[in-house]
Figure (tube, rainbow, N blue to C red):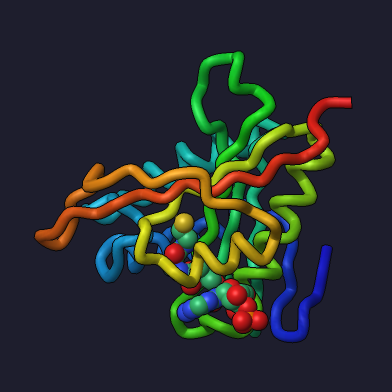
Length: 173
Ligand SMILES: CC(C)(COP(=O)(O)OP(=O)(O)OC[C@H]1O[C@@H](n2cnc3c(N)ncnc32)[C@H](O)[C@@H]1OP(=O)(O)O)[C@@H](O)C(=O)NCCC(=O)NCCS
């Protein structure tokens, strides 16, 4: 689908799940980007995959480098109620070994393009407030901060704030 300077970006396949699983479980144990605290069992990742492949409005993308998954991104429903059908939330994780090499930008681009093509009206990014990398990445795509919730999270013995950013798109045609 795309080849940035360092990465191949393409829709995810089931064979990519172990790579996605590894990156996400590492993020759980090492940081506050996700507020999960216990690693997922692989079975949960398989259920997640089934949900995403059976819904054309929640695509998943991977970044590949030297044959290995080094990042992933996807769209998910913000809330399940049908009135939210023109809103999606994006998620993006890159292996720390390749941070700041362009994978994040390369993975966010197809997610935003997909949301636009799907006729979404708003894409939300819900970001731990000290996560400058994610906030700046999203800002570069035109996402605007719309508000902060204070101390809604607690991990590694401290309270965490959540900043929501939004990107308004043309919406349904
Ligand atoms: C956020 C994340 C996906 C960025 O991925 P990345 O591959 O390192 O980002 P890129 O190299 O594509 O950088 C794109 C832009 O993002 C911003 N950015 C990335 N890392 C940054 C940092 N550490 N500090 C400030 N800005 C940063 C910059 O604007 C950068 O552009 P530039 O390099 O031209 O200045 C990555 O840091 C990550 O996976 N973090 C852990 C998980 C996470 O936070 N996910 C988001 C949850 S909301």
